[in-house]
Every structure is written in C-alpha cells, then in structure tokens.
Image (cartoon, rainbow, N blue to C red; front, side, top):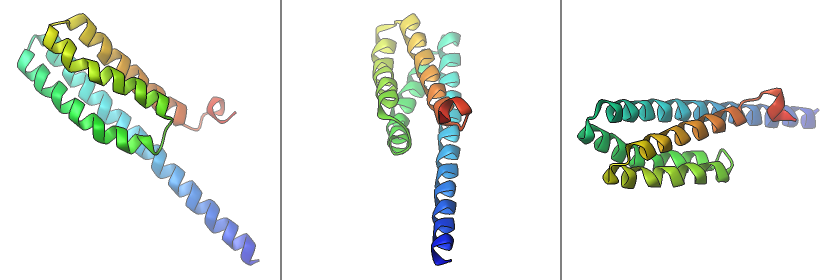
Length: 126
C-alpha cells in the first residue's frame, strides 16, 4: 500500500512539474511574440530610435528567456533563435530593413514552433 501511495505522489509531482513547465513555455512565447510585434511596428513606422531601443532591450531579455527555456526544451531550437537574435542589431545598424524584418519573422516562427512542439498534442506524444 505504501508503494502505491508513493507512486501516486511521484506521479502527481511529475504532472505538476509538466504543467508548470508547459505554462511557462506558453507564457514566454506569448511575451516574445508581443515584443517582436512591437519591434516590427516600430520598424515599419520608420521610428529608428524606438526600433533600436526595443531591439536592444529584446536582445538583453532574450538571454534570460533562453536560460529559462534551456531547462525545458531542446537546445537546437534555442540555438537557431539565438543566431537570429544575434543578427538583429547588426542588421539594424546596417540599415537592412528587409533582413531585419526577416529575422524577426524567423524568431517568431521558431518560438511558435517551440510552443507547438511542447503542447500535448497526439502528434507530439507519438
């Protein structure tokens, strides 16, 4: 009887950790997406100072987000996002608006992919 109780407690703890992890991934992806949208709107409006400020802030915040996500998701997706984040400021400084917007789209797509791959859909469980 004690073993069954212990197994139930362990299962409950595992499910709680998985739920917390999933909630954290979804909330981080939402925050990343919102920040990317703000940067994109500033870039499309032609406000270079706001675009630079928002991009620099995003790049700094990415380091913290990456550290949080590193314990929860596969690292190859984070590395690809990290490469794109590293390109943002140089592209902005060079005036490459098309490349800059393209990297924003890549980051948005990769962060959405991370969220989708961690949700408990049947395709992800098999």
